[in-house]
Image (cartoon, chains in turn brown, green):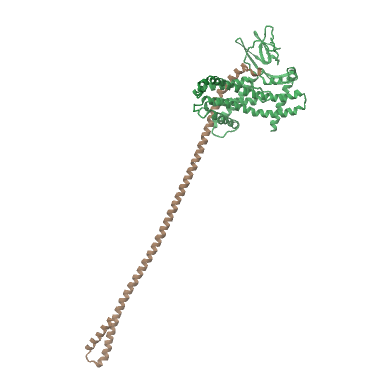
Length: 164
Length: 351
């Protein structure tokens, strides 16, 4: 029976000692331990959150970089395309210009040649007329006493020739 | 593993050494008397008997008789427990009989009733018994461990735990995250944490100490468990909110006539909770000790060396089981306390 009858002395000691232990541990052990634990948990959570944020930021940065790179690439392509076109245009223009100039030169040359030719021909005609006259004169001197009528006759012929 | 085995063998041999002379001496009282001897509190810390000579640590005996304080060493009873050696202090003569101190009658002896129990008056006894001494040792251990740990947290709380800290931290977190928060709730658990942690480690460490050879059976003593349960009861009652009292005196949703039955039942329930806490811890720890001692006692009952190996094997197995029980009972006491606290601070909700 003694076993299940609580002893009053023991109860008193237990109550006093337990209360003292409780109060002392509360102040000097549980407070710092629980405080440090929750502080550590908070810091771990913060660190995890920060890491997550950094990861997101990194991803954002990367996406932005990619976008910038893509833009740069597009711009480069545009510039290259423009340059190519411009170059093509320039060559084309140069070609047209050159062909224009050359054709003009040819035209001019043709005109000059024509003029020269005409001049030369008229010269030749005159010369031929003179020669013919001279020759005819020489021939006719013997036959014709009056060369004035002769010359008129020849000139009339030459004029007809020129019309051709 | 081998070390553990060796340790448990040592433990068993210690207990058997302890047991044999008591057995021989109290043969008439039955072969189980020695077990009760080991379960119960004592006024001196008995370590071993060598032949007829008992070796024990005398403890201070503190008595109050009629407002007068008497303090002397338990050694003055010369290891007797049958009231044969009186200790005289002034007008008072004290006798120790079955680990109880009595005042001697006019003849200087004990007067027995029909059942063989002394009818003498008893002084108010607040001696440092084996249990109190054991408790003081456990408190010293608790302080040493937790001040060391707390210091480390104060210096470097955020860094990873080291040494004793890494042994204690999971237990502290266990009490907080598995016991307090789920049962009390996130809003209220903080104010109960010091009590829950103290009660958990007090029971756990004393359960373990109780398994050591020659140690006191502190957590298997009903005075200790009752006091702890009363603490739980007081904290529950004083932290109870309106909702808690409403559930006792005016259970919502219950018809008025039924309340006549419900109120007494609920009030009874308030008190059965600490009683169940008291008996659960006391009975579990005491039963474990009794089983281990009984297994060893088999050797003496059969009076054969051949039983030795069997007893050692069974005793070792039981001791391992008791290590588990040491933890489980600390856990259960803390868990139930936190459930009671949780009920006391629970906010009203729709039924």
